[in-house]
Image (tube, rainbow, N blue to C red; front, side, top):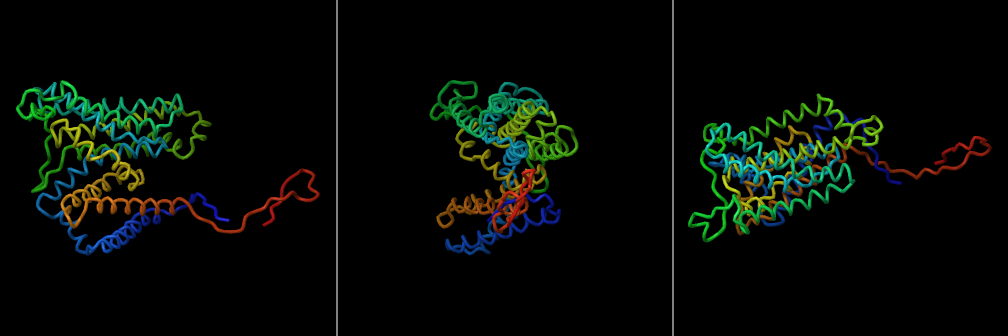
Length: 378
């Protein structure tokens, strides 16, 4: 008989060592895949490191890719650790980009600090509203939030396309010569661009700094507040939370709203930090919301770990674009990401559970026991 049991006494050193060992194993397996596809693993790893960190402009590009992953990773982490399966970070990021770009266009003449705050609020509000829909359906109608949040991703994507390609909306440019040939969004005024933080030749995006600060606040919320305590209880045992009288429905809605707000802020960062225009095609091709699920899983839903993992995955994506060519297909980078994900999740499973192998236990009535109790014969 094979039984999988929850391990409640995992030592702290094991929880730290398992992700490191998992990454080493993932690197070894990825090296085998690279060798089988005709690439020198050592040389490829050196190229990945140079393309991600040491080449000219590489570190800045890595943080460009890491910033939206930080927000979508936090979006997933805060929801998943309470067993609320928000798969809608992609659509919530789209709606945040729509909200922030609309605010940026409408208030482009405002002072830059105030305009940045308003764009952030616009992205947060749009993402929150979009996440509340599956949250309310889950809490009060018991609808599966995996399906509802996932389907809303497609609705948000189609709505974003409609605003730019199939309508004369406020977001669409109808005046420039280029826009008359091919539909495109309105460019934001320079005042709506979020300032980067220059550190030598490296520029740290403003959005990444904001996301890292939020990660610290989220960790404090989870560990040191009553709300965080209720989240932990609901994540470990929903039945115990109900028995203790916790308002589980209200908490589900609140966590979904917070999760959507984080993704919406990521969409605002995409507009303010990088693109400065609503670009449906570029946002959908990037798939930051779905990659954020990978980031959160690798970080084991720890907000501070999400910051580190987002940089690592951003580096891998950046290196993939830098190495992409006839001899290095883009699918190879995705394969390496998948190997890392399964290795780390496998290590997490072995840390949380243990597998016991033995003979099945048979329960037979005890002879002559008037109480009807059972004795166990192995």
